[in-house]
Length: 482
Image (tube, rainbow, N blue to C red; front, side):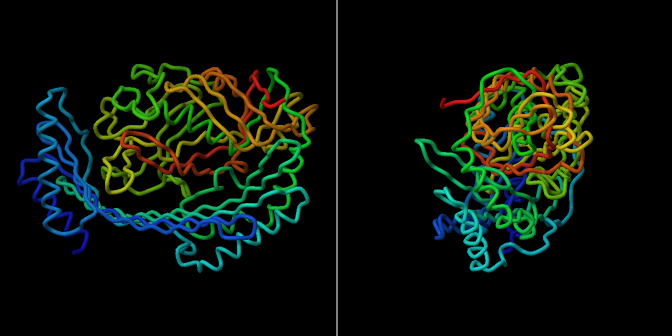
């Protein structure tokens, strides 16, 4: 049976059982992952999952049921089960759910794709990663060379009792390399274009080609070897320039998560905590310096958080979160909106088997001006910190520590010696308050975070962050493993 027929059956059954509102999502997801290590295929995975999720409102309470069995009888049964769950929830009392108005969406949409990544022959993917590994291993001192390619495609058919009829397909692609050097009781790694399996964007095989894994492999491998002999970064308070890769994770952990309105309202605390921001901080809390403007934008080409409609059928949109250092908005849903603002279109579910949660879309630090070279030249003394290696932040998103793969001394406007095992730490509003420069659009890249976790049961989301290198004053830095 076609997905539209199943969703219609489930909707009719939900209404017949007493639902005041219902939406039904038919989802099919394909994933493929390939890892090559030291000239051999280390791991190859291909999965496909399809199922139906039914969400209903009865007496102001949510009910949800889902199944991978796709037949008419199960679709009707799911609707009945969701209504039973909602009625049981209503018996416990509490404030009834009220959904902000939203125009019914009727549309079909797909991620623009240059070359379908799933159509690229496996042999071509393997050969690319083998060549990237060979290029890393051509550098003396490299102990291990790794290359990865990951592909995701999700088709969602969303129908609701309000008339929404959306059919959208999101295709995302990523790749990366990682060189490891060992010696003297130490281990050092350098990655490209980013750590933790590379760079990910919405799009096709052109995302992999743009990364130029083979061309960058010798440089990345050489830096891993150089780190073995580099000194540990001395502890001090200094000026820090974060590159775009590291800054994207700083935005994710210390700006994106704290501005999710379900965390702020205390509705979501599972897995990764709440927020130090309060609902009354909108328009009042100084989050950072005037150089800090952050935007949520689900329309950004290439972002992992890019789509046409969220999982409530709300159109993708662009809205400010922080304007010149002051909180200007939150990530919201139809249930959790600021008065009169409507949903921000940030409800997303991890497949057919999960209810939507408020999730980041693409959360960007807006660019300033100039290049990285100009920013370094304008810095008398400090360090350039590059590519995340580790992270830790408390469950209210206040105190943090990040580790990076590499750090370069800046002295007299020039890059100097390389340091290893570098970390920096601080408090969220103090760090962002010390921001005094962000590089311009020419340095701005939308970096993908493919593993954002939230909720219980756990849900994964893929999100994007536009960032350019930026400078912060008076930051505590140091190194480990002296």
